[in-house]
Image (cartoon, rainbow, N blue to C red):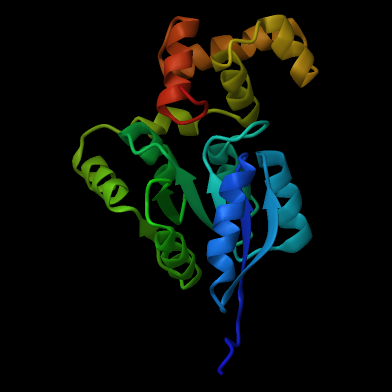
Length: 218
């Protein structure tokens, strides 16, 4: 029996333990791939990356404490060269556009075959990319279309994205200030900046924007 000379190490991040366990079981059937760590939120993802330096991160888009898109941006800003495959139930254009704009290497729908995850890991580790067929179509439509909704999203600072997520979750300015250890006045300043950058006027429009871009679940 021949053994692979190079095993691909993978970090699996999803806030549902049953999903992580399912992915782990699929990966364990492969000789050339191993799960080196798991995480249930975005902050743990960054901690486990520092601890284990995986080759590939399987990253759920919707996670508590820090979503998949913000985690992806943090990984990219570190210039670590780690490959990232996003995992999501969402296939709508704004979410896909944001993911591609932030530099994901792959995007697999949770409705896909389990073998697609293995294919995605090998593809991105080899320097390629992997997108579920539905997602690939969205990318083509994005290239053909005249508008790119992801651009305003790219202008938001990490703190503004945190505030946006908390607003979308229905938190008051006082609660957001307490959660982020900032003043209510600073929260209002971030809210004003968000409405200006995103071209919206009301809190309800901020919520809709956050949902469209996969920052929070509908």
